[in-house]
Image (cartoon, rainbow, N blue to C red):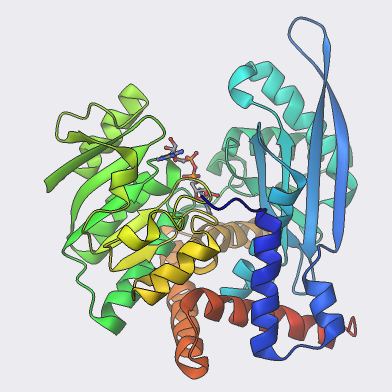
Length: 415
Ligand code: NAD
């Protein structure tokens, strides 16, 4: 299996887009590196009174189009290069959906499953104290990511507000609604992805009512399971998986029952409405739409050639390796790339910033409507680039995003 560094992959993607766009050397040099990186240690008191040191990062990749935007991961395998890659992808993602934002990402190398709630709270507050000078609604706005959640965002916002001695809810997004969160955030990523699938079906004639499968049954995966049927008016959910197992039923499974089973048992394994399936086989099923919604690098050169899905909607960040991407394109699989397919989350986070800013909150249907407009337009713009430049969809999405950021850098006189 290929092994590589996510940041090198992200840089290669920028270089490829820059070549299509004929960008000059200075612009390329600017866009293949983060503008700012912060690395720090956090000293946190554990429940037993001992101190423990954690390593934290915040990277502001590019802010030409607006304040940096991107999540914070608490993960034992966090590395600075993973965060650089994710910050780079956030930059092109916010640009593809045409949000007035840049890209950023942060993280702490830790295993939150080994921390008590009070230790997690102290770690979250320590993280914000370290990055407080560089965040704010007009500088850099973090959000949750893997192993962080709305409660953690609330502690972080509260710590920040204590430091600056005023209300500033827009400093973090994806908060609960009682403290400045927005309607429609919980399902925004999946909703955005399903909207792009709807547009693909309209444009290229895929059948939304055939079957679909979902790898990763967490926030994004569960919502996609439900919304596929709601938005597309049908479709059989034949397989789902999580880190503990996969489940299959050729006749379809009820997404609501699966969500309830997952919430009750912590896994989709042993769902009574289906049979167990080896996890890797889920990706190779004959389905119309496959939603990878777990972690990076699950579609590789080893399994890409066996994929029978007609459409892959990448809700996860970086689920496909470059070698696998090449194989999928050769086999005419319609890939809706991560920076487009999973952009619904950041779009609604942006709506949250706007609402926090003027302290007036929208009805849920308005959030859905505005999200739909943004994602539909972005999908169409990327498909136009596919046709005009005769390139594959991931490269087309990068070309759209990189072109917009490069233009903003040029207008500012940075290059
Ligand atoms: P999550 O932690 O809620 O869910 C991840 C799921 O993947 C879990 O059910 C986990 O058990 C499962 N999983 C892990 N390893 C697996 C494996 N080998 N096989 C099958 N399943 C496996 O995370 P999430 O918020 O749903 O995010 C999922 C992906 O989507 C991540 O790549 C994230 O960066 C991306 N994403 C999420 C959002 C969002 O708003 N939640 C936005 C943009 C991108």
